[in-house]
Amino acid sequence: MQQKRINEMYQRIHESKQLLKATDYHITKAEDTKIMAERGMTSEVYAIPDLILLERANARSEINRLESEIEILEEELRNHIEEIEEMEL
Image (tube, rainbow, N blue to C red; front, side):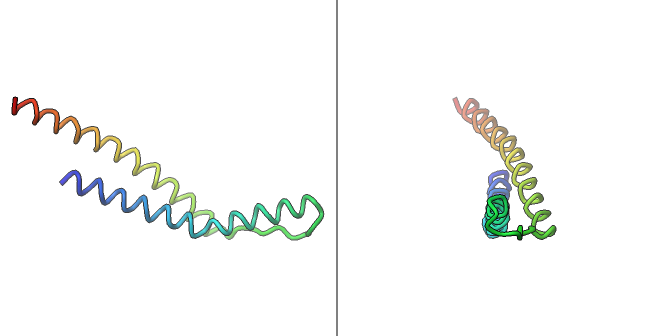
């Protein structure tokens, strides 16, 4: 049961990372146009849409939260397995 929960959390992390990967274009475009503007090559700087910035921030927050929870659950699972092994001896 606990392993199933951990696996579901890993799936959610994967989905959040996919969102970050899918929106990386906006980050790269913003950085590129900023550098080009600094060098006088263009006057336009790409502004990342607020919704994308918010989605990316939420995804990173979700990843961090889930990774912390997984760490705790995996430690609990290891401890439980050790207890069972000790009982069998």
